[in-house]
Length: 320
Image (cartoon, rainbow, N blue to C red; front, side):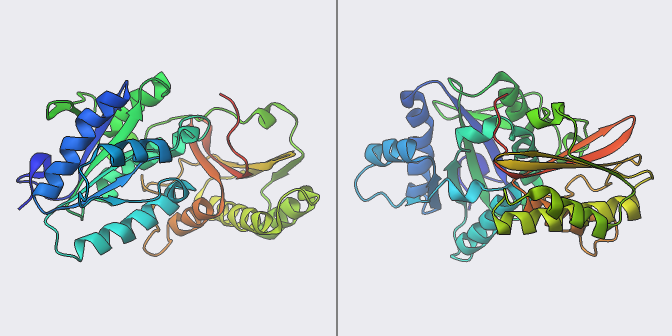
């Protein structure tokens, strides 16, 4: 039988933890973890090194809490989803009645790539719902930008508070609605310059050749191969499922390459496109999923002119 906020529920209980001090973080996390230990539930922590050590020191000696490495799993949203689903499946296989986990995104992800992680925070309300999971997503209000906190409220049904409270955010939006919204990401600074490459209705082979020719040895070979694959998949999708003309633009910076592919269609119908593999790829979902696996940052943008996907390989973390 599940306990705490998970009592009487099935699936994923997704809560935000917004804190302004170490004491406020511990005031929520310690009762959450110790309640799980007392109930015999599998209880885990995936925080940065500093916060993990803060929690570790505050727990009673011998408390049965699993500490997980937090940073590497967040290389890409798709990688995080895959890794956590595997982890939760292994936890559930132990027979635990509930999995309790407190985690946090690295602060670097709250900047230029936040749009992708906002999609992640929304999507996991659905993606993890087949596990008996109660998760707390911690955000330090002292360093989290206001626009990120606004998205956190819309992607988490409740906020966990000191004293055992579980307050509705009041603005939570179901994933299918949230993910379908027009949510433009900030332009990469390189996009303010003239593109190095501009193609109209390129074949996938022409798109691949253009990327390789533009690289000029700047990207590591594996990264270049990943971008070539991603661009090929996205161009193929646009030609097959979009509305002509299909335009490709490419920019190059010392530490990254940025490619946009635009068509005049509405984009994929599946709100989870890119985050989850499509069953048969008939609507281009498998190709989008491959591109999200291959690139360091992927954005989606719909407007009156159509649908644009932006692919970045290299360092996507520019100042915003």
